[in-house]
Image 1 (tube, rainbow, N blue to C red):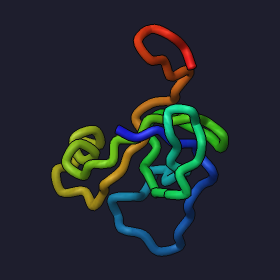
Image 2: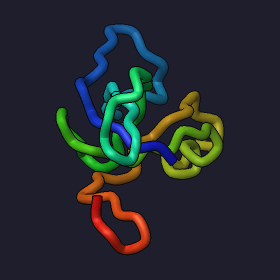
Image 3: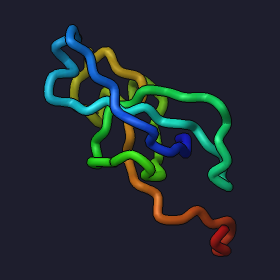
Length: 93
């Protein structure tokens, strides 16, 4: 699982049929203190996240396919949650 901040949406005129009706978002990966790592990924949105939202991303193909319920889907990353806060041992950061 990775933390990230949604920076925008991805649009394509030609796409694999698997992606029809699904939103793909550009996620800026971040550390626990929300500082940007300089790395980005594209992830299928399952939680209706928007630009600026802090999100939890599952970046593992088999798990992503299980969440999207398609054993053969060409997907690796999926947004699985919007993060309210990150805490360490009960203390909010």
